[in-house]
Structures are given as structure tokens and as C-alpha cells.
Image (tube, rainbow, N blue to C red):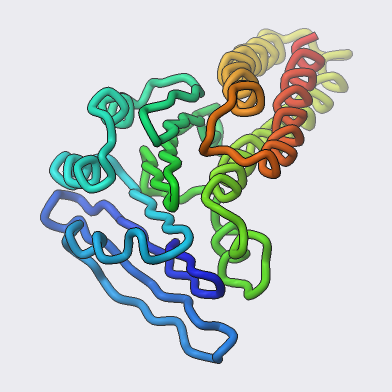
Length: 267
């Protein structure tokens, strides 16, 4: 999303079955205070994104799917991304972390799926002076639609704040996505608690083993998120304003709460 005051311009890349079908989509949801309609334009060339940069307060570019190496390389050149960071983008088994490369922050989070079995997807976030660039491993959707909706609302904080606040909202949405998964585990455990009193079958024990295994994976996944958010709070990154750090404290509390729930369900 490219934003300039009350202008909101979503920019998304979608991946098809092959590189030839990969297309970029540019949608303008702009000038709401003047009653103008949203405009949607396809952009198939990364070079056409260059005129957008530096002219708006915040630009958010989201890349769905990592199948087009050429596109990723071109974006790396356009945004001056470090080769080591780009290597981590395509090696999708990274733990949540925060790394600084010059004027850019590189943040990795793992977005959880509510579908069983437990599965996560790597989301790479680059935070710059006036842009946020995100790479998603999958093309099947994400948890960011509420953020997009808020960005389309005139006067919302999402539209008036800087790129660091947008990055916080993305991180917070990913972390909050773990709560529905834990609710599923809670419901399953309650059912098993009632069933196992009169049923000591191998099936019940297998279900307990499967839940415990998923809880272990959840703990291993969410733990690094706590460390990453703590790093954003603790380290004096110039890309993060003191105002945004206040919101990140709430995000950190959510990671602690998730870890405590996981430990309780394991017990």
C-alpha cells in the first residue's frame, strides 16, 4: 500500500503456475476525502514501481509467492536489499528474528495456519525510511486483510502513521493469529478430557500425543517471536519511533501470553 496523507494505494504481486503468468497488481484506493473512486491498474514491470517511491509518506509492497527469482532480484536492486537478507527470504525455514542492514530493518515472522495439521509460513518484512516491503511464502492468503481495510478508511491511524507503525501492525496480526489455533487445541483437550475418563483406547492416547507434538512445535515457533519483538523494544533501531515502541510492548505481552497458554495446555 502506498499512502500519502489520505491517499491509499495497495500494491500486490500474485504468483501463478509459472513465471510467465506472474503479474503485479496496483490498486489506488485514493483521495477518499474528495470522493474519487478506487482505481485498479496492473503493473507487470518492477521498474514501474520506481516512480512511486519517495513521493508518498509510506509505500507498502507485498509479494505473494517466491517462485520468480528474477522479480525478487529486481526488487532487491530497487530497494538496495542486502544479498544475505534476500537469501533468507527464499530460504523459508528461518526462525523469527530481527536484523539490521544499513538503513533497513529485516524482520522475519512465521504466520500460522488455522488448518490442521499445524503449519506456518515465513513472512519477511523490510522496513525502510518510507516503505514496507513484505514477502510471503505462500499465495493462499494471509491475515492482513483487516490492516488493508483500515488503510482504506480515511482518518484511521494506519493511514496517518509512519512505516514503523505499519510494520508493527503486520507483526501483531501474525502473532495474534496464534490465538485461534490455541483455542482449537483448548476445545480438543476439553473433549478428550471427557472422553478419556471412560475410554483408555489407543486412539485417545494417539490424539493426546498428536496435540502434544503440535504444542511443542507451537512453542518452538512462538518463542523466537518473543525474542524478536524484545529486540525491537530493547535495541535503539532508528527505524522504530518511541511512539511505536509503546505498541510493540503490547505485542510482546501477546507473545508471553501465548507461551504461557502453550505451557498450560502441555501440562
